[in-house]
Image (cartoon, rainbow, N blue to C red; front, top):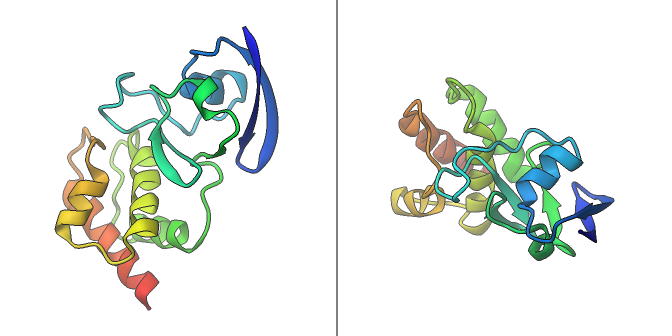
Length: 154
């Protein structure tokens, strides 16, 4: 066990956990932030996506030791113009079905739009790679990202 200082959603936290404990379990079990979901445990589905220093990361394979000192943002606190545009577009296009993957999908979409404000299909494919939707809402996800990009462009 070791103590780690984390900044999560703008708030400081100290946790005393195994250095190899995945960040996902620190967020969910130690800090009670359950919006980040467990899907596969091997960084293949994207349900556990969070932002660390502005970059989309799979928290199920990120040891807490590697995340310590970074600025961690979860679905509970994602904000800014890209987040607002994505959230509004998700509602407009009725993206969620079961909803399980949506926190990871949204976190990846926001990171994509921050890096590539006007993505085409190839950039959307690349930016959303590794985010699996078991309900196969991919057409609505793509349309929502395009709508969000158009909203941001004004």
